[in-house]
Image (cartoon, rainbow, N blue to C red):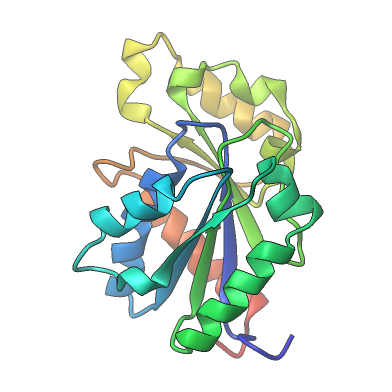
Length: 211
């Protein structure tokens, strides 16, 4: 890959409402503070809702032209895993229009625990769960949980209100992932988001040594 070879491509997936968009909106300002130049590509089946939300939330922080929505017209699995052609094309257009971009984030539409990203599309991917889904979620496994590079357990601030034992959920996640990294976050307050960003930067050094 020659075009955009120093661009870290990150996929973010997870069930509907788990906090994928909120995580992106928390990460982007921190990336910019660290001297990075991010851009965001969202995926919805029929609308631009997520892209519009990101533009509104990050107004004055991120150039709105660096947020693009893809209307997949089909299951999110197809657009980011089985046939990522549309996302690859939009990503190439983004990098051509904004050659300064060094971090390209692809957000999948909300889907189930089998969602993964094609390695043709991204260098690494995160899967986001939240405590409101129940502490049992890591035990359900699924390739989204077990194969992602980083598992994020979000909305830790509401765990006590939804009868979720955060200790159990976290330990189960560690067990089913055989020690691969897990980060606990509250995206609205920023808790844990720095750890996610640190993970990005550590992997950037591994994946893009010339970046």
